[in-house]
Amino acid sequence: MRRELSRLRDTLAELGVPRGGVLLAHASLGGSGLRAHDVRDALLDVLGPGGTLVVPAFTPENSDTSPAYRRRVRGMTERERADVRASMPPFVPDITPCPAMGVLAEAVRTTPGARRSAHPQTSFAGLGPRAAELLEGHDPHCHFGERSPLARLYEAGARVLLFRVGFGVCSAFHLAEYRTTPPSPPRTYRCVVPDPGGGGGGTWISYEDIELDDGDFAAVGAGLPRALLRERDVAGRPVVLLALRDAVDHAAVRLSASRRGASRPGDPLDGASPAP
Picture 1 (tube, rainbow, N blue to C red):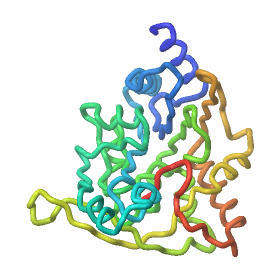
Picture 2 (picture 1 turned 180 degrees about the vertical axis):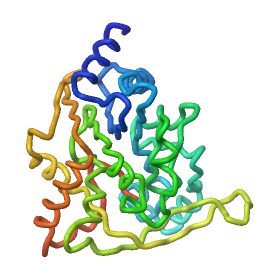
Picture 3 (picture 1 turned 30 degrees about the vertical axis):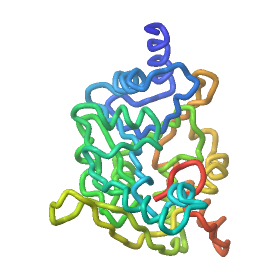
């Protein structure tokens, strides 16, 4: 295992993971033989003490407007659906797990000293000296737009690492959805948050944000100029690194062209990444 971890660190360094930089990592470790905390430690080693590692820590489990919820209650009676909804715990940043995001995200989120943004559905977690700066002030009515960590990662010159996953889960493309011309239409989201009265229970909130849709993200990624990508292989699957700014700028142009006048799908964010 020690030799494998050394080889992993070498691969990440060769790929161009920036020492002292900021990295947004999406990962799937299934079938790789790698343990989440080992991958976390390898990434932190390559980033160095001045680097910051960020992961998606989304929680579609606390929403009744997500495809995940609709799949869960499909075929249930109205009473059964009400019971499920009543049992859904509120989002608490320091406690709520993010199982849909994979074991690396959970390893980062639960590491002592990790920071997490406060959005109840689409939070990010991070480790490193810039984590607090990049993740604080996540507007609860803005999933991935200009008042989210993605906009700060864009300004910080972050890199995106797709570790054995495809572009279908590249959350950076969501920032591009806020920058398309014309802009995406709004829709209503609902989720459960802690009772503001401090009673220990939850209360449901609803808000409007743009309609998110990752259904064409794989195609957007396939259209990226190969010169923008650094690619290697780990345990039989590709690992890709690129600049987050390049990803967003390319996707904004591509989505503006491809979605103009197109009908919108019925399940926002339905597909490879969980939905709010």
